[in-house]
Structure formats: C-alpha cells, structure tokens
Image 1: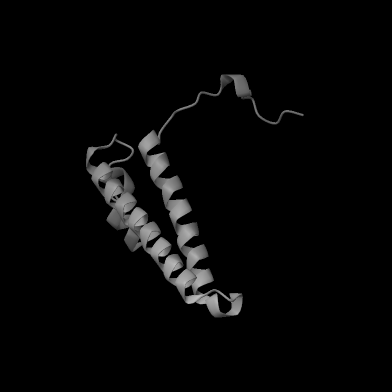
Image 2: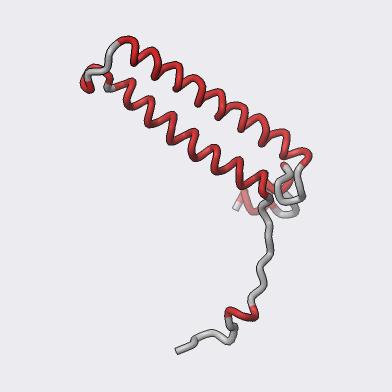
Amino acid sequence: MNHTNTSFDSLKEYPVWDRTTRWFHWINVLAVIGLIGVGLVIFNAKTLGISIEAKIFLKTIHVYIGYVFCLNLAWRIIWAFIGNKYARLKAILPGGKGFLTALRE
C-alpha cells in the first residue's frame, strides 16, 4: 500500500546542522532542565526538609549551571559569525527579499 512514487532508497540525506550547533542545543536543553530542576528544589526546600547548608550548596550548583548556560550562549553567538552557512546569523534571523512585504500582510 505505497501511496507515493518515492522509495526510501531513493531519498538522499543532506546534513545541515553541524556538530557544534547540535552540541549547543543539547547543552542548552540540559542546562535549562538543570536550572528548572534545581530551582524547584530550592523553591520547595522547606517543604522537602532541606537544611540551610544543603540549600546554599544547591544555590551554588544553580549558579554553576547558569554559568554553563551563559558560556554556551556566548559560544553560539560567536559561532553565528564564524560557523558554516547554516549556522550563520543570516540563516538564523528572518529577512531576505519579500520579508517586509510578507510581514505587512
């Protein structure tokens, strides 16, 4: 029951995102999950029965994860200028011919 004329054998893979861009996104995902998780534990520390010392430790971990997030973002901004054509700023930001016309419609 094949509804298309194309078989999977005739499809060609075109790599677009480079390894650096993929690493950026995965580090970003892990950092955001870490920040949310640690932040929720800190927020509910009293309910969870966490001591003052443990709360200070969690805040320190939260800050370190924030540093990772910021350094990762800084590297992505740098990579937007020196990366391949798909990672460049021009490929990320909207624009080009007809962009303003399409935006007005």
